[in-house]
Image (cartoon, rainbow, N blue to C red):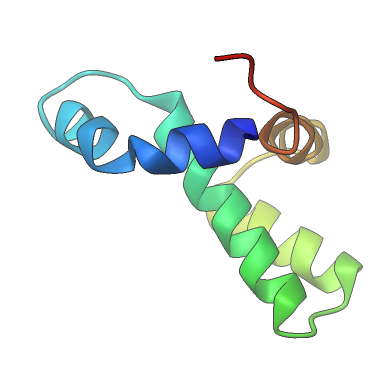
Length: 77
């Protein structure tokens, strides 16, 4: 199970917490990763997808890189 799969399983709970004032960085990261993977699966060129996702979420190259790397990491549960 990857970090993404683990966070995806708890996404509804994380959304409820976020809506009630609890900061949930992981929720944004799941959305970033989903958009990135969806656009790649739809046939988007990597550089276009990279820049589109980066601009949409207002994040840096390093942040996007670390999100993708973290989401692809195996979770130890």
